Structure formats: C-alpha cells, structure tokens
Image 1 (cartoon, rainbow over the protein chains, first blue to last red):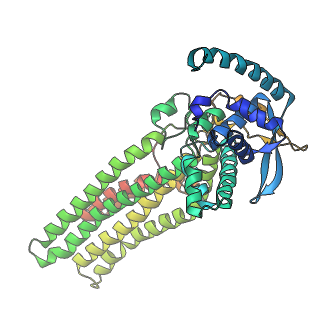
Image 2: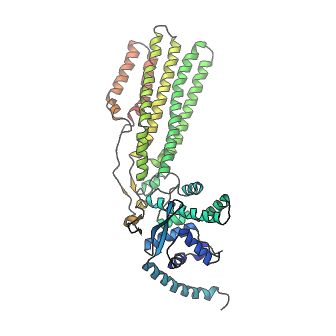
Image 3: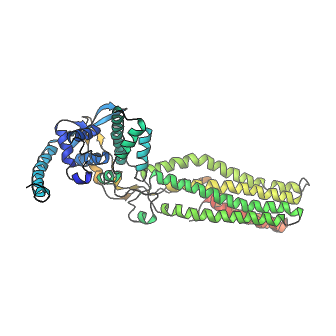
Amino acid sequence: MISSDGIRGYNDAIILTVLQDGDSYGYRIAQRITQRTAGAYEIRETTLYSAFTRLTKAGYITAYPGEISYGRPRTYYHLTAAGAAFLAGKKTEWVQVQRVVNQFLAEEQ
Amino acid sequence: METLQTYLDGLFKAVPDTPKTRKAKQDLLDLMTDHYHAELASGKGPAEALGLVISEFGDVDEVMDALEVDQPLTGAPTADQASHGGAIALNEDAAEGFWAGTDRFAKLLSLGIALIIAGLGFTALLSTQGGPLAAVAFLVCTGLGVGLIIAASMGYRDISRPVRHAPVTAATQALAQSQANAYNRPHSIGLVGGILMCIGSLVPPILSNYGDFTGDEAGAAFFLFVAIGVYFLVYTGIVASGFSRLARAKVAAASVDAPADDWTEDGEATAATARDRQTATFAAPRHGGVLPHDLAGLQPFYWPVLTTAFLFFGFIAETWSLAIFILIVGSLFEKPLFGKRK
C-alpha cells in the first residue's frame, strides 16, 4: 500500500484524472482510485477533501448538489477547462519527474 | 450516523465554528457515511464498518490546512493569544467551558460565604448548651467556608484569565446573549429571593422581643436566613455575570469567518470572494450592565441606608453585633447587587 506522503503532490492530478471520465462525488472518486490501483493506493477522506478544497479554490473543479443520498444531496465535482489544462501540465511534468527519479531509483537501467 | 457525527464533533471541537468549517464537517460526514454504507454492503458488521471508516479517515489537520484555519483552538485560548490581534476567538465550546467553570465558582464561593455566616448562627444556637460545641461549630464552619472560598478563587483564576481580553465569535456572542436572556428570570428570582431572605432574617429577632423565641434562637435564625439569602444573591449574580461577560465581549471577524461556499441557481458552487480575508477586525464592543437597570438607580442610597441602619441598631437599639453584621453583609451584597465598580 502506498502512503499519502509517498504520493503527495500528485493527489490533485489523480483526482482530476478520475473526473476526466465524468463528474463524480467524494466516496465514488476514492473508490475509483482504489479500483484503478488494484488497492495499492487508498486515498484517505481528509486527503480527498483537502484536495477538493484546494482544487475548487483554484478553479480546477466546481461542486454542485446531486441526488439525495442518506437524506442529503451528494456533492458532485466537475472538471473545468482550467482543471483540464492543469492536468495536462501535470502529466507532462510527471513524465519528466519519472525520468529524473528513475535515473536514481530504478533498479534496471 | 450518530457515532460518526460524534467522532467528527470531537475532531472539530477545538476548531472555530464558522460556516466554512461547518460545511467541511458536513462534507466529511457525507464522505464517511458513504464509506460506512459501502463497508456494510461488502458484508462487514456495523461495528467493524465503523472501525474501518474511523481508522481510514486520515488527519484532520490536513483539512484545516486546506481550509486555511490558522490555528485550531485547543481548549480555551490563552490571554497571550488573544492579545495578539485577537486572531483566536472564543468559540461556543470554549464559552460553554467558561460558563461551566463560572457555575462551579459561583456554587463554591456562595456556599463558602453562606457557611461562614451560618456558622455564626450555629455558634449562637449552641452557645446556650455550654461546652466546646459552639466553638467547634464556629471553627468548622469558618474553616470550611474559608477553604471553599480559597478553592473557588484559585480555580476561577485559571478559567477567567483566558477569557478576560479574548474576542468571541459572532456565534458565541449570540449564544451568550440568549443564555443571558434565558437566565434573566432565574437571576431575578435569585435576587428577589435573596433580598427577601435577608429582610426575613429580621423577623426572628423582632419576634424574640415578644418572647416567641429566645435571643439565641432568634440570632441563629437571623444568621441562617442571611446565609441562605447571600447564597442566592452571590450565586445568581456570578452566573449572570458569566453570561453577560461574553455577551458584551468583542466580536472577532477571524480569518475563518468568511462565508462558506454557497449553491448558485445553476447548481454550481461559487467560491466566496471573501474567503481570503485574513484581517482580524473587531466590531465595537457592546456595553451592558450585568444587572437590571432598576437596581442601578438604588445604588446611591445603598451605603447611606446601611450606615443609618448601623447607627440605628448600634446607638438606638444598642445591638452592636447586629449593627456590625449589617455592615459586613452589606459589603458582601454590594457587588452581586450592583456589579463591579468601575
């Protein structure tokens, strides 16, 4: 299992990637992350909510009320154009980061 | 989902109560509720599901950082924090703690004073029997009373110091105001009851002149009446002042007091433009009397009346012990009746 610390810096991009497939809500996004990594990374609720707060403030996502669940409207998140552009930048950056870190940490070169 | 709500309440206990933090708490509860039901759906029992949700919740400080809640309150703020621009405002939980402490202080102090006064009554009553009983009653009551007063004062110092110059959140002030209003009636009952007991204390000594009681019984009844009256006056006065103190405290517009995101008509959340307000500005403090205004009008007559009573009982009735006692009790009543002298 990967810790939050190990993946810090890419949580926002991971969430934006999930939202690229369509609008979703908090716990569903967490589930998607777990499923996509086959359980290797389970994002914590506090990490997820902090990311929502940051991304909303930055204008990368917007929130809106969806269907009623357990007596309350679910908060759905939607990827904005600014969010998509930010995500594209992060993907490019990740390729570079990966290349640099691999120079030091990858076992096979 | 009471357990999850309680768990979150505990985590947010030290966090200033603002629309933004309330919304965060609700959103986190929604997340945890979804998680909990997902665990139940996967075949977990309720207790196991709850345990999993709580253990996988994460660190609430992370949320506070994202919300830019500068510094969560850990208990009541210190006077030092409050003096630095008032960034830390007293939230409702801290206020409840202060009032609980004030109530404890009021009980101990009023009981201590009442015990000392009642001790004089017991001494008077037992003095007729001879022997050491009267002296023992006096020493025990006075010792206990003084002990209670010292304990009350020491405990209250720690409770009141952080509140002395601290600003309060708007919600805290509203709560304090409603508490103060709600306490108006008990306070008035305490005042009237206390004053009636003190007036009633004169009845046994008067009746003793007609031979209904012995002088010692009358003296004992007088002190007991006064003790009960003083208890009511002091207790209700202190509790009321605890509420009014926060009701007229400065209101801090702290950094976390920005309005929370709200839903717009097209269903999208808009970031509140005021979110980044970091300045701690204060509304003008509201000044209000601790006690009903009708009593304030009586204050100029208070000491002249007491002095007249002292001179009357001393020189005319030649009951000097009663005369001196009127002065002592009178000085004790002054603060509960008219509040602190400015």
